[in-house]
Structures are given as C-alpha cells and as structure tokens.
Image 1 (cartoon, rainbow, N blue to C red):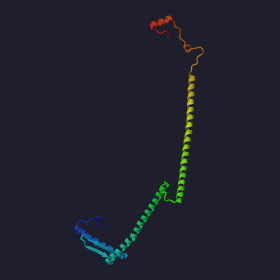
Image 2: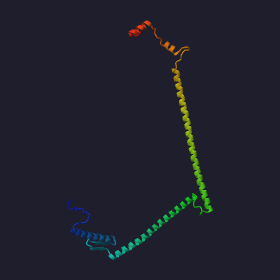
Image 3: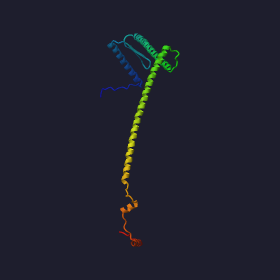
Image 4: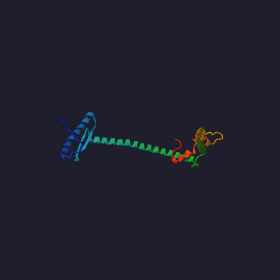
Length: 228
C-alpha cells in the first residue's frame, strides 16, 4: 500500500552514517516527548543521554542539578526505609528459629525423662506429675492391648465354629456316599436257593442240549458243527 511505513527491526544499525542519523532523530523526538510530559502533567523530568562517541545530551524541565539532588535524597530515604524492614525480618526469623529450638529441646528432655533418664534435676512434685502421666499412658496401652487380645480371641472362635460346621458337613456327605454304595451292592447281589450251587443255577438258567456220542464223534471228524 502506498504511503505505508515499514516497521524497522529493533537491532543495532551496522551502517555508521545511518546510525548517527537515527540517533539524532530519535534523540530529538525523545527530548520532545519529555518536554511534553513535563508541561502537560506538571512533572519534573530530567533526561541524560550519552552517544556512542561519549558525547553528552541532556534535558531538564527545571535545573538538572536540583533534579539529581532530589533523586539522591529520595534514593537514600528508600534505602533507610528498607533497611529497618529487612532488619526486622531477620530478627523475626531468628526469634522463630530460637523458639523452635527451645521447643525441640524441651520435647527431647521430656522424652528422655519418660525413658527414666535425667531425673535428678526434677523436684518431688515434678516426679509425681511424671509418674501420673506414665500411669495414664500405661493404662491406655494396656486397655488397647486387652481389646486387641479380645478381638483376636473372637476371630479364632469364629474360625473354630466354621471348622466344626465344615467337619459336620463333610461327615454327612461321606455317610450319604457310603449308603449309596451299600444300596448299589444290594441290588447287584444274586440270591441262590438253598442247596444249590452257582454251577447248578447256571445250568438251570441256560440248559445245554443233549450230546450224542456218535454225532459228536462224527462232527469232530468232519469239522462240522453239531447244531445249526
């Protein structure tokens, strides 16, 4: 589009002549913006610029010395106000660490005394209080231990009842199986008449045909069966 300005990349200009021209233009524009800011907003503005060759350019809405002195005094005030806050913060951290160390030492001492160590420095009243606390703690331990034992006994009792019931069920199952085997044996048993042998019963059940000696002899000689 005609008349549209191209965006310049913000980087160092390699060409020396172009760099000097750009510095001059941008410096004048910067000083103009600083002057407008001081007039429009009634602000005290001081601007200092050094060129690449070390040449000084500055702008001040009033006196540059007054602006620099005001900046120095304001910086010193900030440093003074920040220093106490930092000191207070370090003191607070130190006091917190000290309190924590004291609490840790006190807890460690109580623990050693509960184990029966370092009891010489305690008075009679302190020893009584320590004894009461130990008795209270021991009572709680024994109570918890007794409850654990009762719970274990109840669990074992439930397991015993389950084993008895399972044993009874297996006995009934074995008895039923034995009865079924006995019934099957009674049904397959052969009852013989009194005075008869198994051979006579077999012969009676399956009678054999009379055997003729001549025909038997002939069948043997010819290799033919006696009966069709």
